[in-house]
Image (tube, rainbow, N blue to C red):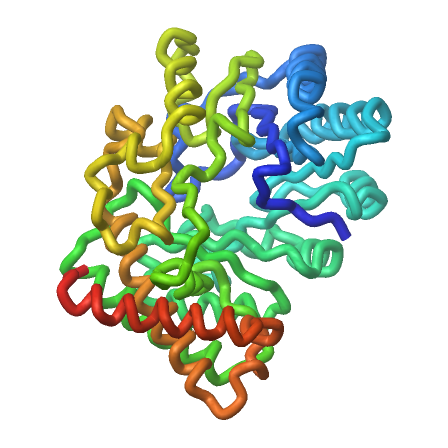
Length: 384
């Protein structure tokens, strides 16, 4: 089974196949879609050039076919993947695409099945039928969910939470678990969050979720709660790199072949590429750590676990360091919930019966406890 790696030793190349999409999801950050598609020679040229330039720096490559909806350009995606695999037999190359899952044909299923060990589909599925249809244009029953579940059984579905579906976040995660999916839930960015309304609900829903993991030891916590308290331990000597990899081990090429640090820097497809604006962003991302980009984060206890979206900060507020207030608030609540969850696991009669603690050494367990204690001391004086 192919896996998508998250490592500085891996190079991730996003290729914008098309600016079109057949849905209009409620939280989509990509505005002003149009019919532009990348040309075959452009697609292959930018990938070939990127691999030639970087193959000595990285152990493997991931090519991400992006949109719009990439399956609107399936023939192009197939052509590029087949060509690259045939040309670079000496380099591990996995291809992937995030899809709304509504366009699959029998021909596409056949090709995907044949290549499931080197091509990963990430399905966007926002919970049960009601929540998904509310977010994603009544598309739930158009998705062959069994195909995605059976072909890539270890690949989490991408679940996006918005204000309308937040009160049922826990129930929707449970619905996906019952369907046999692993889940990667995330809070939608740049939507109409309200602090007074949504923060108490988010806290309550996370409390339900952490109790589920405490009561069901065979589950590994989803990324929403998988925040190790070790990050906050005074014994931790591992420096946290704030950057997500945008502009360093991640690059994006638009439908014209122009480079961006990340796909979130492209939100308006009608905006022309300006090299004099984009190139300095690469320089800044390659030369600075997080605190140089967002100095206002200096001293914040949440910093070791916080990963702001530099692309949306830039495209929505004009600066990579112009933080989204709600990303900060949600991160602090997630940290507190994760610390509570791991505390309950560590205090149980058999901590290593929990899947996330199963292979922890005594030193690692002690480091987690030290992090929880440090958080308790800090957060007593640090309001969310």
